[in-house]
Image 1 (cartoon, rainbow, N blue to C red):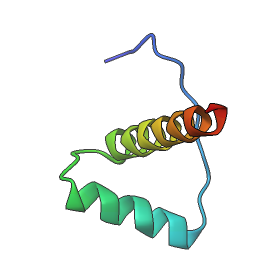
Image 2: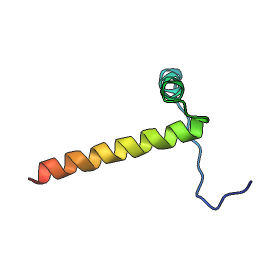
Image 3: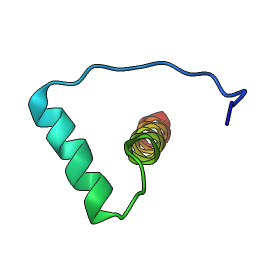
Image 4: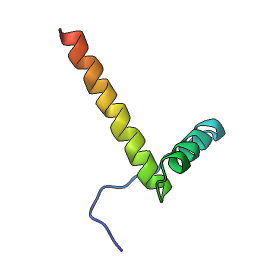
Amino acid sequence: MATEKPRYSITLDEEMFKEVEDFRFEHRYQTRNQATIELIRLGLAEIKKQQKKSEH
């Protein structure tokens, strides 16, 4: 099941890895990848929100 999407790997310390796993299970994501993508999406949305606040 090949994909055309860009790929890269990350290395986490034990504490952050546990936080990602906790998030994954709490939100019932099937894979760690899905949970990580959602965390990135949420983080980027928060950054954009903060940037808009600082513009006004």
